[in-house]
Length: 46
Image (cartoon, rainbow, N blue to C red; front, side, top):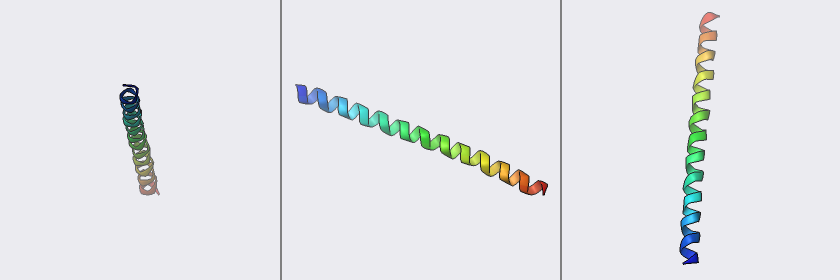
């Protein structure tokens, strides 16, 4: 029974970690899009 509980706990932690990394990737991607848009606007003004 202890092994089952440990396996479930491990799986839960691993899945939560994947979601955290996935969310961080989306945030970084969003920030990159903002920088790209700002660079394009600045280039057009020049």
